[in-house]
Length: 238
Image 1 (cartoon, rainbow, N blue to C red):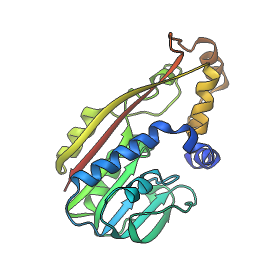
Image 2: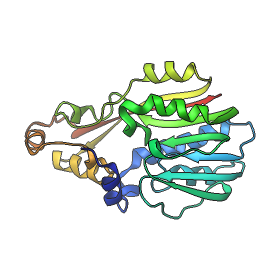
Image 3: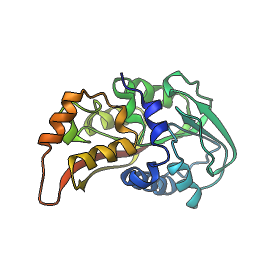
C-alpha cells in the first residue's frame, strides 16, 4: 500500500535539493496567480504545502496579502512565511479534512496527483467551497510523468490533460493553463532511484523483482538515464 505520509516525512530534509522541477512549478504557478487572480482574496487554502515552496513563492511576489492562509499537509507543517495576516494549519489527508467556507482561492502545487482515482471528486469538493468568483489554481503531474518507471509497473495512475481540462472547464472559466514536459538525466539507474526517494516518491509500491529488473534494463540515451516530468498547471475562476 502507498504510504505518502511516511515517504515525504523521510524525504523532507533532502526535498529542496532534489525537487527542482517541483520548485520550478511552484514559482510558475505563483507568477500566474499574481497575474490572473485579480479578484479580492480574503481566505486561501493550500493543499499539500510540503516544505512551503508555493506559499513562499507567493510571499515573494507582489501578491495582495489575504486575511487567512490555510496550509494543509499529511505531516506536521514546518515554519515558512505565507502571504496572509493569519496562518492556520490543517494536518492530514485532504480527503478527510473539512474545508472552511467561503474560500476565495484553493491552490496546490505538485500534490494532487497523489489523489489518483479520487482526484475529480476532490476537485468537485474544492469548487463547491469556493465563493463566487473564487479561484482554483493548481499544478499537478499527469499521464507521461515518470513514464520510464511506469514500464516496470512502478508509479501512480496519472490523468491526462484532456480529461482534467474538460472537467474543470465545465466548473468555471479557464484563465490560464500550461502543459510542460521536462527531462532530467542521471548517471545511473541507481541515481534515478535516489532522486525519487529524495523527493518522497519511494511511496510507490514496487517489488524487489521490479527494482532489480529496472536496474538491469533501464533505458540509456547519449545524455544519460532519462526521467520525464510531465505537468499541467491551470487556473479557473468559479
